[in-house]
Image 1 (cartoon, helix red, strand yellow):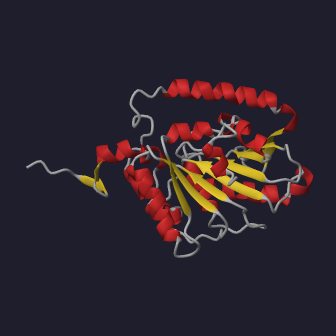
Image 2 (cartoon, rainbow, N blue to C red):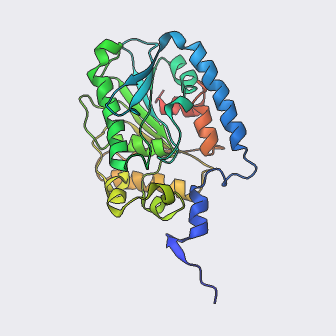
Image 3 (cartoon, helix red, strand yellow):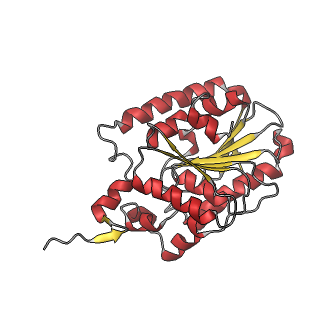
Amino acid sequence: MNLKKIVFGNYTQEELDYEYDNVKKFKDFDFAAYLEQLAEKNKSALKKYEQVLHKNLKFGAHEDETLDLFVVNPNGPTHVFFHGGYWRMLHKDDFPYLAHGFLPNGHNLAVVNYSLIPKVRMAELVNQCRASIQWLMDNAGGLSLDPAQISVSGHSAGGHLAAMMCTYEFSYPLTTVCALSGIFDLSPIQKCFLNEVLDLSNQEVEEFSPVLREPIHKGPLLLLTGEKEGPEYARQVNDLATAWSNYRETPKTMFAKEHDHFTLRADLGVPSSEITRHTLFL
């Protein structure tokens, strides 16, 4: 008898690893070429918006607590973005291309850097992200920002962080939040290949799974995932929308047609794209 060993839901280890391995999930996907294209867009964004960029602003004591701030609309709306990388890789310097998408729409942009696991634990990582928003609000006057017009988004692990920000109180309410390709239930992460680096404890899974927390943010909230990202990413969205409907207006969900994990991220650099416009609630 050949019985499959189930490790989470109805998934075997191999199947669960596949669900969260976004590179292997897409056949013939050239990840190196994808990163190279974004690197070129990063260079062009830094050159184009050099005059409005405040680079490597320190928002905390840790060396990793820095952000890049583009101010094109003094005292206008400011969008805060948290990058992905499964909490263990990437850096804000991989995301200046977002300026191409957000700035032409009249939004200032803050791209946040944070320490990665295993350098820090999840509690410190989340706290750094929380601190970045409060720092922007506290220092808004000197940065030509309006602290009452701050919105948030993030992609992948950054989608998780954007959702986590909904569970904290700030000096001013966040205007809008968009979690793209987000992970809202950490229990499958603890059971798949990612945990070899993350080493999540049961306490961390319980404390930092948005699906198990109560949202404070009552404003517009969008959970946006690519239609092609697979059943686990869809479940993550639907489970959070259901859980949080007990506390607030049910979060809006969107499964972007023809989009996968990587096209979704790339389209944030296109000002007229459906993804950018939904992220900014335009």
